[in-house]
Image (tube, rainbow, N blue to C red; front, side, top):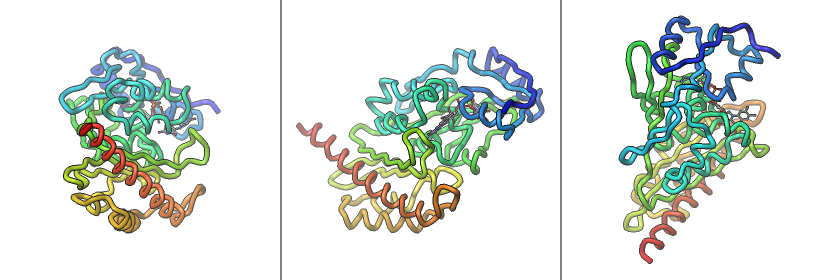
Amino acid sequence: MKPARFDYVRAESIAHAVEVLADAGGDGKVLAGGQSLMPMMNFRLVKPSVLVDINHIAELDRIEHRGDRLHVGALVRHRMTAEDALVVRHIPVLHHAMKHVAHLTVRNRGTFCGSVCHADPAAEMPMMTVLLDGTIHTASPRGSRALPARDFFVGSLVTALEPDEMATSIEIAVPAEGSGWGFEEFARRHGDYALAAIAVLMERRDGQARNVRVAMMGVGDTPLRLLDVEAALEGREVTRAALDEAIEALKMSIDPNSDLNASSDYRRHLAAVLARRALGDAWSRTRQTSVEIAA
Ligand SMILES: Cc1cc2nc3c(=O)[nH]c(=O)nc-3n(C[C@H](O)[C@H](O)[C@H](O)COP(=O)(O)OP(=O)(O)OC[C@H]3O[C@@H](n4cnc5c(N)ncnc54)[C@H](O)[C@@H]3O)c2cc1C
């Protein structure tokens, strides 16, 4: 299919992009990698009157390391994020998650920010933004905002962005040195959107799990932080019994939808299986790192 008629504007700056969005009166759309927007326009699921192409705003095309936070500009592609030296070395959970995003051609064009703004409940980057204590920086005619990820995802394909507002960058935390990580995903075929996925971070001090962070997708309309699962492990050694308690907490705290791909019961079962593996991996990677440091 072909999209409905639209105007195209090549934005020369963030201010220009915001001005065009405001002039469109709520009917404009930012064009980043186009990997989700163009298919939706071709199917006429969205019919913006104007596309604001941000691909030529050079200042958006960079990753910056500031203190213990990483700022990912709105034009940073999935591939660039995955291959960034700091991500590879210090945020291996994000490097690993990127391998599960679609295929190379999509990863060459699609952007981290675009994925977060698109807010597909089965996409990896919204979940990673929640896991990594993300903040979405935005610009609009009213100025700039910094929206915590926990307030950003409102529903399936719905965010807290106003129609005349664009994301300029996403800020994520660099995990503490020695953190263990786990990532598990199940999709029918490699590169497909996942039925469910989980990402975990934890530190280990005095034989106990600390700063446990657990995020999941595919089990709700938005990516979820699983606070009850985190609480079940915080301050404890991650033994089989502790994992059993964490998995019980997980089952109680999610209420997945049934859809064409899977029933609610199946998704809950899948979530538990993935969680047990990811939590165990995170704990054992923490231990391995401690051993390396001790040696
Ligand atoms: C075949 C295929 C398979 C895929 N598989 C996966 C997968 O397994 N996992 C996954 O996570 N994704 C998958 N995707 C989606 C892909 O990751 C997209 O790149 C991503 O969802 C959107 O990023 P984009 O830069 O292409 O955004 P676009 O398509 O340009 O935009 C998407 C939406 O976000 C808005 N937007 C974009 N940038 C901004 C901004 N800076 N400010 C405000 N609004 C903005 C747009 O207006 C639009 O509404 C797949 C895509 C395809 C085509």
